[in-house]
Image (tube, rainbow, N blue to C red; front, top):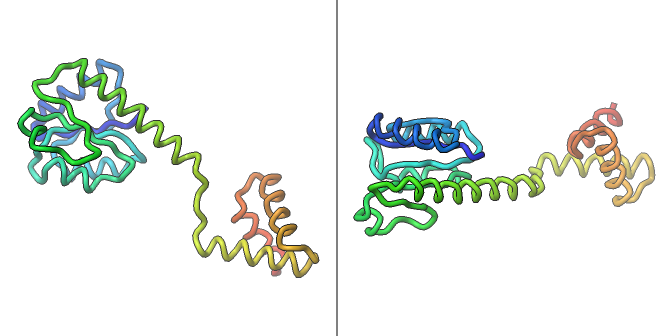
Length: 182
């Protein structure tokens, strides 16, 4: 289930929304009364949903949205006037006065979307930085030189040792470099 951060300028409003969400089966990770507090809460989480009003003591909802990590979705609760003025793309909204089933249905869809994005990010292979790529290349060159392997054979050897030992290929390359360089 997605992490939920509730942000409203009035502590009572924030608590009431949190209580409503909890009663309907959602787990609320943080309750905040300022944009900065919401950003700090979001920085401590990998992804989630910010359920918020449109104005806080230190910023507006769109400034908060622009500052949030891209792994966060926003559900704006605002008057029809605010929503009719146009909200930035990517922000989902529900009109006040609030209809509980509208909020829950929208939150469920948003939660599913955040979960789907998380699975998609998780399934993507992690990119290796230049230092890691250099270590892999050096380990392959060392294997090629000492064991008369082709580059393809050296790479397959690194992959096999990595899988057999349960380490990633970078750690295996580092281990080979330290053992064979000694």
